[in-house]
Image (cartoon, rainbow, N blue to C red; front, side, top):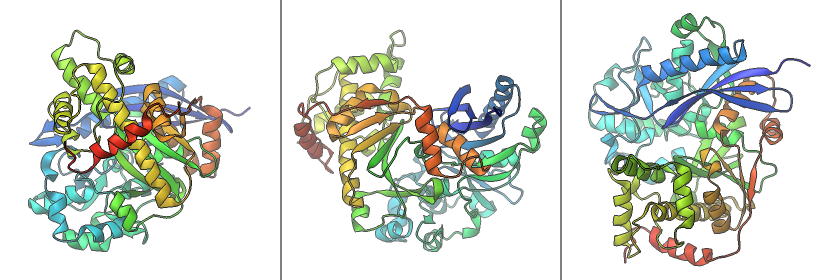
Amino acid sequence: MPEPLRFLALDLGAESGRAVLGSLDSERLETTEVHRFPNGPSLLDGGLRWDVPRLFEEIKRGLRRAVDRAGAPPDALAVDTWGVDFGLVDEAGSLLGLPFSYRDQRTRGAMEGFFDRLPRRAVYYQTGIQFLPFNTLFQLFSMVRDRSPLLERAAGLLFMPDIFHCLLSGEQATEFSVATTSQLYDPRRGDWSAGIFDALGLPRSLMQSPLEPGTVIGPLSGEAARETGLGGLPVVASLTHDTAAAVAAVPAEGRDWAYISSGTWSLVGVETDAPVIDDRSLRLNFTNEGGIGRTVRLLKNVTGLWLVRQCRKTWEGRSPESSWDYETLTRLAEDAPRFRTFLDPDSPEFLNPEDMPAAIQDCARRSGQPVPEAPGGFVRCILESLALKYAAVLDELEVLTGRPIRTVHVIGGGARNALLNRFTASASGRTVIAGPDEASSCGNVLGQALALGHIRSRDEARSIVRNSTRTLVFQPEGSGGWEKARARFREVAAPGATR
């Protein structure tokens, strides 16, 4: 039997990063985490920024540990990260300062300001992207508005995965899936939007021509090659946006399914063959992003377990001697009274408050609901609200696509949260299948195998995931008050809802 192929997935999230070694034979994929490290923006040079040099050191450390673990170099490597954030480079390809985080306050008012140049509807019809105040478009416009001197020196723009691929290979390249998240790309024309760049007053020459998902960029070179001795190792643009990689690893069959990529953010969507850009999708604020095989991920971003994370951060600061791990908080939530307090996870007040529990309490008071006091009550409120939000988005997807959704695949870290998955099944009235929890790494590996010709299609990739993944199934547990909860949630989540 031939030796299995080995691929290194460098999967960087906004909270943590990991190096995952994927071992692939003809029918199964096994993954092993060889390195994990914390991530998060730092307050540097007057803003929230990503520490690229530190992250690059962690990537090289992950590569060395992968070699030590396997006893041989991998067959290729690839990086995937979150979307929208970017760095500008000069003519020599050097970064012009550390990239800003999407949570930095520099974009305040930028979205509304850009609409003075190009109306909201025109922006949507050219890009098909959901309006979020930190999209690449509005980050760039904030620089235009504030007359950033970096724009005069910039010769190119690289998204976060592009930056690391450039450091690894010396080549500047952007892959399709991350390009489409930016609100700079026209998915129907298949190119950067001329209208958007004209409104920005910036040249399209800043951008790289997007590569197909699963493309070899070049060999490992430069500093990384010298330090590791692995010069020539293929560096691959697999699926460089982490959600695109995760969706490639959904173990689904047929067409009557949706996915929830569940983590700090929750991405709720379906896979389509063409973008859905019309007045309904505009009104409902859906986004069209690229995926494996040039498919479209029609989805909506929902603020996810970020709310629990930030509550936990506050409680740890107040009582560091207590246990605030996720398992404990979920157990407390399960024991808390149900259907007391709901919130809209996407309300701007929850984007980055100094005190998340206080923000939730303020929301409850304004809407005339019981105010959570104990940690279990807060977490129950968040998880029930997330499940109800998911249910509403799934219903909207059925309307937009005209096809039924009977099964919901939950992938990513949230696949391990059985309580949230139970709530989601009951709130939506649909079967929920949870797993794999490391979907981004799996999709990253499969995209590398696609690039090197070892698999041929997304269907083959998903067949491998089905053969390799243990999933958990959650069925709706009767109405149990969920129908009334849905009606109350619609009232609370309505714009400007108060009592």
